[in-house]
Length: 229
Ligand code: DC
Image (cartoon, rainbow, N blue to C red; front, side, top):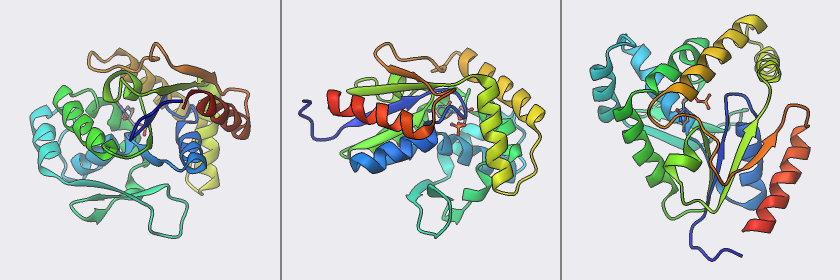
């Protein structure tokens, strides 16, 4: 049993490995807050694209990151959103997952100054509360002292298939091959960047979700939670 006033549980892994669904369900089951840290990088990407800042203009993106106010709220609207994200009080939630955002977010997240600013914001959101945080560097960099860390993985074909199905279910146009190529590029950027690359934290519980139903993964995560915390 861990005696602590506030506990962070970290879930890292590549895109579409199940972090978002499982992270939210785990948080809901154990009464913790939930933060999808990717939405901060996505929000900054949306702001960059909206202002027509070239994706290569690192200085302008760093300035933008320190000027804008990104707020993540638990969803207040009756829809399928896990949360609402505001930039300077304007709701941009639906733009977070556009294919334009998908194609540019990994590159923006390689900028060290951007990572520094957003990491500070993540830590302040987690401060003093029990929280499940999902991302790429949560167990390694954002919250290395977390008492419980998960690493979710799945084959790239399965991850592309999940993303494709999600798109189709929400009525968006979707091309499986394009998704697969996009995932490969993002995996590559996320794992090869110098600053806080995607890595399995040394002491993380790894779950390969390729052939597992989400309910089975959740049961396993809850079992581990009740053993460790
Ligand atoms: O989890 P996601 O697909 O929404 O993340 C979008 C991008 O943000 C991803 O390509 C890498 C980056 N990211 C990151 O570098 N560190 C995090 N903690 C979360 C996301």
